[in-house]
Amino acid sequence: MSGHSKWATTKHKKAAIDAKRGKLWAKLIKNIEIAAKMGGPDPAGNPTLFDAIQKAKKTSVPKDNIDRAVKRGGGLDGGGVDYTTIMYEVYGPQGVALLVECLTDNKNRAAMEVRTAVTRNGGTMADPGSVSRLFERKGVVVVQKSQEGKDVSEDDVLEATLDAGAEEVKDLDEVWEVQSEAADVVAVRTALQEAGIDYDSADVLFVASMDIPVGEASVAEKVMRLVDAVDDLDDVQNVFSNADIPDEVLESVDA
Image: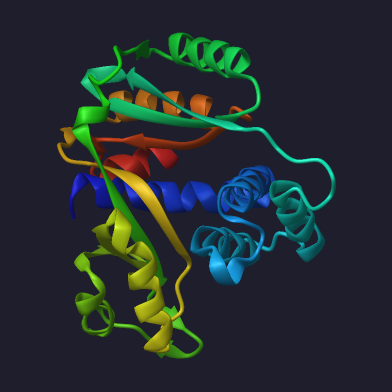
C-alpha cells in the first residue's frame, strides 16, 4: 500500500470520529452551499451538488439541513452565501508536507487561525507553490467492500470503472478507493451506479505524488497532532498530507 493509501485509511477513521461529534456535518453543509451557488440548486443538472448531497446523506445529515443548505447556496431563500476557497501550504515534522483547504467567509480570520494552529503544533507555513507541486488533483471514489450482504471485489470495481476513466484501485482495508483524472470522477461514480455498486463518496482531492516515510511513532504522533489541530478549525474543509506512516506505527499512535 502506498503512503496515500495509509493516509487515506487514517482519514476514513478520523471521518467516522468527526461524524460522531457532529463536526463533519458543518463541512458537508458548506460543500452543499458552495456547489448550489456555483452550479445551481438542481442536483439533476449539477453533478457536484448531487455528490455533495449524497455524501451528506450517507453521513446522516438531516434532510431539512440539506434542503436549507441547497436553498441558501442557490439563493432561493432570499439570502445566499459568500465563501472563498483558500489553500495554505505547510511543512510539518520531518519535512512532511500538508495542503490545507479552507472554505471561509473571512479570509483574515482563516489565515490567522491556520497560522496559529500550525506554529503551535510544530509546523511552519510554506511559500506558495513549494508544497502544492508535491500533489496532484485526482478524482477519488470510495466504495465499501461489503454491501447489503454481497462482497464487492477489486475485479468488480475495475470492470465497472475502467472504461469510465479509472486509473487505479487501492485497497484501504474495508473500502476500495478508485482514482481517476479529476474530470472523470462523475463518469466513474456513474459507472459504479450503473453496475449496481454503491459508493460512499466521490470527490476531487489532492493526492501526494511523493511520499515522506515516517517510521518513528514519536514523529508520527507529532504529524497527527498537527493535522488534528488544523483540521479541527471551523474554516478548514480538508487537510492533505504526503506522510507515509506504516500501519503498525499508526496503531501505536492510536493506542
